[in-house]
Length: 403
Ligand SMILES: [Zn+2]
Image (cartoon, rainbow, N blue to C red; front, side, top):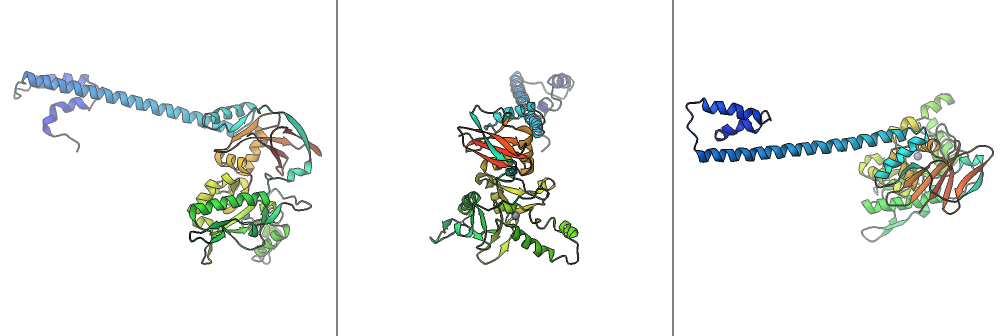
């Protein structure tokens, strides 16, 4: 396959080896003259050969031009990719207002206008909230270093077992779209509506009702009881030792996201009575992690964020944070800690806003308001719907729905 058959031999030096055309012609002429055994070439045949040569040369030139064109295209794509990378790096380290403007330009190119930039023109007013209210709302951070502040009374928590949607099986019978470990599980009303929509969509995709909610809302006592079950495995250890040993196994009472009432742990439970982990069915898990943002959920503890969240990979734990925030975190590969930090560092009511245009959905503007003093003045729009959530750290996040 490396060489052509003999009849084409005179042409081969011109076709490829050294590329430039000059060399084959100068070397071919003396060789044909200096070879006495070679017969004279008939003029018609010579003319045919010249035609063949010129055709080959033309093809050669066209190929070279095509290669140049291809190289040009590759360089152009590379330059675009490098430009995007540089700008993304800049937006990942938002230290000054200038950087946030760059991020807007980049995302503006890519079919959505998601990014940080000057706020849209909107009439504003002010609402007042107590500083303690930073420990309320959908976006508050609760974790190993951020204890949950329990409210005086619980509202908006509803029974999950009784409020599951029905789906119609292929044989026509109606059943619940998913299963629950026991009838005591409950969830925040808004998060439950979103969960129901998500798990109905899951049923429509796979036609199975095997998803099982093992845990939803947990009171302080629920968490204490759960923790005690783990403590039993370490008789004779001190409290400090046990706390360290259990770090990766169970949340310390008062530090669990389940206190929020907006999180669920999902497993699988077959009709034959077998429970298994979600990551034992990678297809199901992938569907949930790829689609959960559409319903406002995030996979809260991904492997690559363990150092940031302080909690190792958990394929079961999904948290409701509402659609725009879930969408932005998913699109930008951020966990909640990183997202809140970005909002704190790059947005303000009278500074830049984070503009989020949800793929196939509404547009939002998000900004951070630091909680200074006992009562906090929070600028909010007069003509657009908005929500305010504390971050359970230092301030409030305002989310404005623009359309
Ligand atoms: Zn959980």
